[in-house]
Image (cartoon, rainbow, N blue to C red):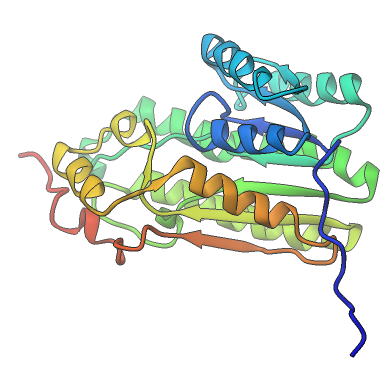
Length: 265
């Protein structure tokens, strides 16, 4: 039988942008890319955390790293990120659209400004990242977009209306993009993690009961998600893993929120 196996994509020398890189999944995927000798441009709003990450990653080896502090909800910041990346390395191959945050509150109790901030980052910021980043991939005639979503984009629970709504939108945007650019050789992968150990839960305002329930189910590490993303990136060019849903083994459905997220009267 003839061996028709296609070569896997070598990430050495590939140029990647990672948004939301200062912690969690963004930080972990940046590290995995650097380990594979990719050139990585990092962005997040927390400049001090970016600088700390850059110093740590430079200890891995001959790391090629660019840090561009910024806010993905601001068009000028995203344009600056993309332009500086291309000026530095002459091209762009990978866009990891990871920036985002959560917020849990019942609709009648929700903070309007937090709603706006969440939607600006999770949805509008994603659109800006894709708009300016994918333009460069199309110029190459190839590339890969990784979009970090969540199982909340499939499952809705009380208290999760706005965050889940944003992730349903993320999934729709990513699928539309896949249909728009696939014929031009650009792959799009949406990653939907379950419970992950990051700063996310506390920042999102999860109750202590929910945080404890997450701990009990042996949650995923950010590095687990990063490795899955690498597997998608390394597939042969004709293979696009469109969706990756990754759960902790002990997480079944939406049970982590079902009985622990009651509205405070």
